Image (cartoon, rainbow, N blue to C red; front, side):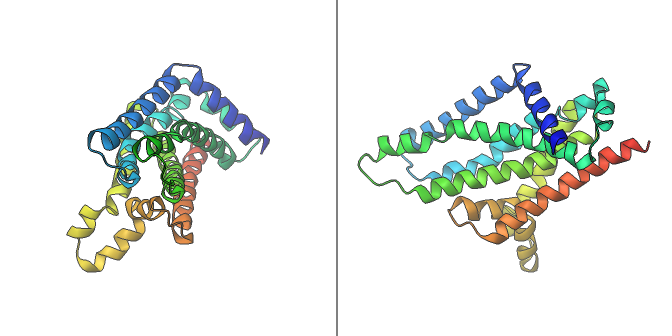
Length: 242
């Protein structure tokens, strides 16, 4: 546990040691405010479902940008050898990086948490705000971000080139997201609809973002996270034996 926390703190410090973290947060905030401005003030759409439905696509580019350096940079500069000598299991080191990235993503989400309430007060003053879809939307974004982070950390462990890590993470997340999207579900044969709904990120995300948090959705997210964290730890372990 101590090593995991040490790795997490080290990773978080590395985020803010360069302007990248600040640039990411500014870009994310501007993008979210832009979406709100478009939906609520330009087209008069007061339904948050469309706002949350756009987030998985934005995140396809944002999350790989956060994680692309996590392992790739360690390999490139040789500091991964130091990490592997720490008195801890590989999974603890992987979890340290995972929780650091997750904390950063959670902070980015927290910065936007007031936007829905502000907009509702402007668009529909005096009306009672339905907090269910807002809470469900942010829970789904946090969980989806955790899945993307686990996938993209695995992608970063496969290479020492950050651009390659970004592209691999983008592709892997896109495949899982698109598998459960309405476009795919309408085109595949009927007997494949249920399997695609089960494995696809989109369908599970959509359930929670509507404020319907079921155990099967949470179990799905947790299973995907642990699967890719296990693959990540296996990649690190295989390096020890080379």
